[in-house]
Length: 94
Length: 94
Image (tube, rainbow over all chains, first blue to last red):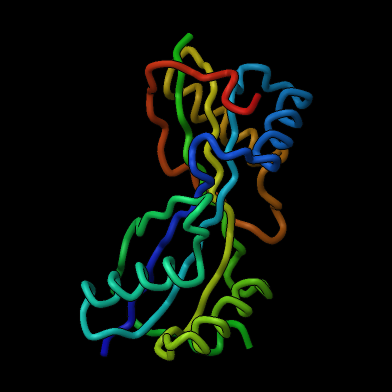
């Protein structure tokens, strides 16, 4: 088993109303960025996991997106990268 | 003026408590992903803007992060890419 860091991008699908993005765009206009024409706000999820191979880690990440991380109706996801890392810090959140 | 799409990643800084990431990690464990050791949840922001050059678009994106998009105390941000696009849809959210 090796340790991998997986970077996942999840964004509202085009054509889906994104009220948070609209609010951010309005705020940017007020703050002196009048040239902004559109903002969409999604999530960036970093998963650290153990897996036998980089390919397996990527496959598991797709499963995670399908089952929990992304809303299949309103969001698109992309596995941006799978990187082997030296050590997995299981205590990072404890 | 040209149109650019800027992809920005904003993630909780390492060492900062990330309750949402912890909750997602716990949920993944319950769903049959016991090898997950850490999850952090940040934001992925897609900004479309007009600018004279790609460099200027990138500089404006850094300003947006500093002034609104990212919390400088708890978050790290990265301008992932600045891409020239054909047309800016000002009506995308309307």
